[in-house]
Length: 476
Ligand SMILES: *[C@@H]1O[C@H](CO)[C@@H](O)[C@H](O)[C@H]1NC(C)=O
Ligand SMILES: *[C@@H]1O[C@H](CO)[C@@H](O)[C@H](O)[C@H]1NC(C)=O
Ligand SMILES: [Zn+2]
Image (cartoon, rainbow, N blue to C red):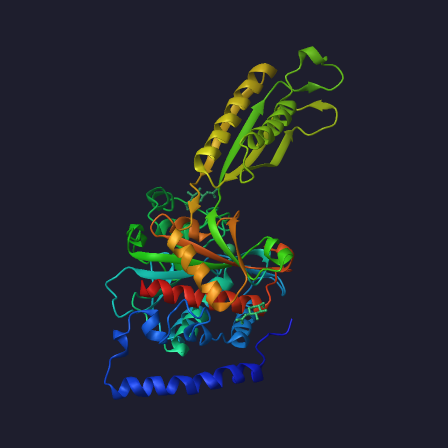
């Protein structure tokens, strides 16, 4: 568990680099050259970027893993449940304090900080061609009740450290670099996941819905936002929208929340696509009746309709022929729920995901047809078939994937391509920007519970890869 970068190793790595660097800066000063005129990685490093693969520049990237580990620990103490669990809900006191903590770190990293009307926080390092689309990275710091320290946090504190890594290396960005802390990735308080990124990416439907959205305590979204110092004196939240094209690229660093990387002993997952979920609520209604008195030919059992639909979901998902199509009936409730009573009502909630939107929508259509047919054949009423959300999946951008792969090779970090089956703020950023994601291993794939853990070595690899990827994209 001990960080790979012990202090002595850290010094032995860094000290020679400091000596390597000083002549370079001296030369620049002598020649009276403005360092901002260096605009390719080759010029910056003084070596061709591909040969040798271990370039001077990638060698000079050094992550302060101990400080980062300390910050992750500190951030986890802003919690409404006892350690090691973490509970941090949107616009609560702890959420406000942790935002202050992050803004402070952004400031210390020399970034200029701004916040929008719902509390998405941006820390910017201006590039020398700041009129070009910026390169952004970021994630979230909210945590569902009794969850862990790493989900989202690694992508925020890791991003700040990636900026620090680049600053220490002497790098100068061409395109500006932005770190974004997204408001409320988790749906805990208002039932809306990825609230900040969804709105930022221009969801007019969400902008409208937020005017009337309340939490479980009947506190309105706008009142809650105001209590945290946001949306003061404004009901119109459309100023949160960011125009398509404002960002040249967006890259999110995140724990895998699955066990593939750990099982295979691979350090980095390069995400190629994010599967997007759709969710559906279904209700059947029948006559119910006494479990002994009503004979079989006379029944219209709402429970059996639900059971048949659950099997139909599995069948339609398997018919897609792709391993990427999944479907789950996670909720199946029967009413009245007594052993001697024929179910008169049933309620199902179905989650289905795919990386191919058309294929996922075909599954939804087939599920709908089955629900109608089952209701007809069983003489029950299909009283509700409601698609709650049907978000498009997102493909990661080819040139960002290439930048991440090239960076992994230069840094000699093992990597593999993979699909993100959970969704993230990146899914919504993909609506306005080319997008990519970097996964790091996490212990047994645990997430959303206190046992969530990522080793500091894996986090440091992720940060280093993020730093080099941001540098490459910034110079494009
Ligand atoms: C929620 O608050 C609104 C406005 O304050 C009020 O009109 C409404 O009755 C409340 N609803 C409940 C369920 O308390
Ligand atoms: C790259 O990493 C592998 C595995 O960790 C190691 O065996 C190899 O020596 C490294 N290559 C370089 C050039 O550092
Ligand atoms: Zn997350």
